[in-house]
Image: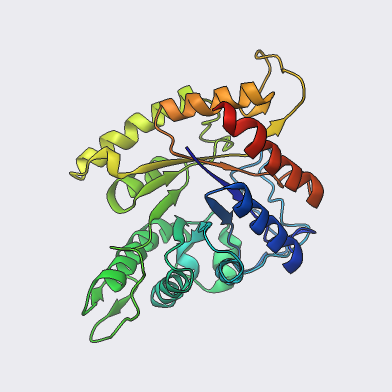
Amino acid sequence: MKYGFTIPGRGPLASPDTLLTIARHGEELGFDSIQTGDHILVPKDIDSTYPYTENGEFPGLSSGSSLEQLTLLAFLAGQTSNIRLVTSVLIVPHRNPLVAAKTLATLDVLSKGRLVVGIGVGWMKEEFEALGLPPFEERGAVTNEYLRIFKELWTSDNPSYTGDYCSFSNISFLPKPIQKPHPPLWVGGESMAAVRRAAELCDGWYPIGSNPQFPMDTPDLLSEKLKRLRLETEKFNRDPSEVDLIYRTHDYDLSNGRASNTDRNFFTGSADQIASDIRRYEEIGVGYMVMDFGRNNQNLEDVLGSMEDMANEVWPKV
């Protein structure tokens, strides 16, 4: 099992010194990857439903702040050595695909091959409208086309493409990414459209367990969706083992005492209980586990302490 953690792009922890402290500490402890989210702007009025809270409200609305994702990862790349850098997720329709592909390729080159491109279609219609993007309702089709464009630009010596949203030819696109054939592509999202996108176009599926519309907060629920992923992968004549499974939880909470299993969320309770939970997810095929240490706690010392507890108390028991 490999372990990652999210790093905030907004709030009191999103200052340069604090971000570097968290990133470097994670690298020293042996975490495999850093994840950070993507919003270019935050509309002041949002009617769209945020997928990962029970009430559908976006936690970032009150602050209106968000560091630009790729700039943040480039900043962290220059201050770390080994830890992988994950867009979690890159909202693919937000950026011109040639500009995005160039920025991602550059980031992979400058980080010496540490980039993972987590991708999503987006959920906030108001942000799409403010950015002047193709219609929100077409974001799935836009994403699929842009992913094909990324691959064409990253792998072809003479890239060209003719599509519904972008076309180009007779161009040079260099340098290519360090990783071959290209940086791993992980699909975020829990819908069947996301599962199909992972099966057809990408290298990993990256769901979050806390989506009320598509609950996957237990191994049994996730396992049912994995059956569909394997079936969809085979439809595209791919070996299901080619698609990695990455799982992110919002629920991590290590306590000193053993919690009752009757009312305990997964990844909460004692170190033994959390380690047992990780083993159960590993048994069904999860290879990467991502924790949100700072989601409900904006105190730096608490976040660093949670990371240390995970590395020193939980990992040895897995």
